[in-house]
Length: 350
Image (cartoon, rainbow, N blue to C red; front, side, top):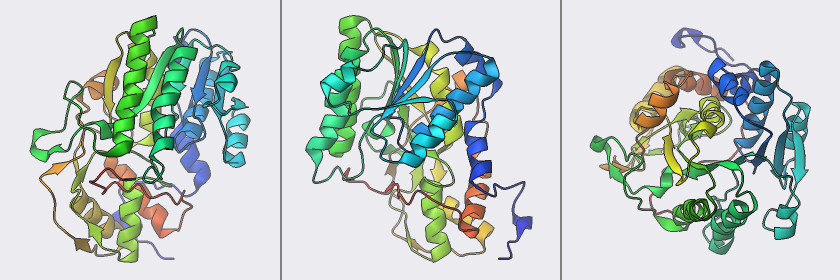
């Protein structure tokens, strides 16, 4: 296939080896933050979309810092490939059904815990399971690891739809979740807040939206539609996006922010990205004309990330570069996770 590389401003990513290296390469700030951690680290829910690269980033960081600390990845591990890659990086793995209280109690004590377990897609029709994973499980974990510092993954979905011109909700904005998934995410936060208050557990609530890489994410969703000539719904006309490698780096830097009562931190890219502009930019790079349907709403599900940018700086990979990488990836038919984000959903049903 002939690809016009003159449309791209710099080098592109050619394969998964290069991609994994970009996603898991520690920066000096991450090495410094991990060096300051006291004791071992556990990642609970490591088998999802972000967990494997986060685990490998932690392992590479430990190696670069010359540290001899355990990194433990816990999950049911539906994918043996992910488990093998994690272990090859030097991460210990434990297969565990954490909804089983006895199994959860059998996990080793650790001073530092990242809680990533969650359920989103498939929630409609199985709301009880979503609530169990997103609210009941956090209550179990918050009790079991009440003596740990905990960075808790949450979602920007907990905010209401807000006017684009207002720049997105900051951390002190009232929540207004739409649908069972978003409501259960508030339930997750409330459980950690309750047990933090009860036991003095230091917690950071990490409200993320949306992390992307080349095999998954909003940019890939749009790029695939542009390439295939599928109409792009503009109703959810604007989004926030952050490179997954930068999101992972912020996770490891967040332990110093854990507090009681829990601190809340919005984590995403600083820009509000127009879906129409994104599709046109991808179309230019791929030599395709995007097809649109609908029109932009005045509100969107967005967040204001000013605090995290002030703390950690501008993302190391700007969104313009990620767009070029994804466009090239689609043109060469690079492998994907085949998991659409459904970012355009406005009724809260996933």
